[in-house]
Image (cartoon, rainbow, N blue to C red; front, side, top):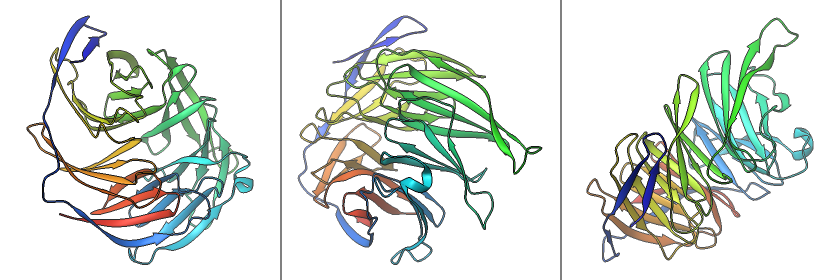
Length: 337
């Protein structure tokens, strides 16, 4: 049993542990579609249409075209020298609506790259945001505005808003606002769904926040086993948390209810990230590869097999395919049930 502290209402909620069924049959297989050598370790991947952006560690950032999924082709790359940084690239995120790319140098500020011109790449450099960013999300509210939300390992949740100034030479993005919101610990992961924000805070579990017209306040805090590493939001009141040696959690606290449900699974795995595609769950398990699970509406979670594909950092679903960021490069699979 685990307790939730509801910050706004001051309510203590009890989590109801869901059922976890051991693997007995119907194992899922992985059918490899393609593999891309990324030179550096493939630390993260972001898919937008036929474009795949890769955080290639010490090799910088790469863009691959997957219009032919079985034969990806490299479009361009930016080395650490090109980016003006010295530490490996850990995360990439592309905001298609404004054609802006963002990348994270290890434990630094996010890097901003303008891809709005089809024939050129313009490096804006590091954003004036959190200096110890562990993970970030970018939300574009208009074609000339975006906000960066960062899990800052010193100061908690930070947000910074930027606006485009077309009157300057070549146009620049100016910082127009921002704030920091303290949290229960030192955050290392973040995810956002509409007005709900969830941070992972290592040994202290997770903390959720609500964004009401730009006013961000803490909603509740949940203690979990292990070290909460990353969170994957399904909607505003349901999400998965990767807790390293504590395995994984499916949480459904809602946004205002005093009751919540909890399912812990994969306790025998070291889980760093969880990707979700309807009922399919893919757990990134470092040196143990990928662990596949099936989730149902009744909170039952069934193991569907563990696949040793090498050291896995992160995985994402797109267009029915699974993209795994590994030390062996980017690997693309189909899950065969």
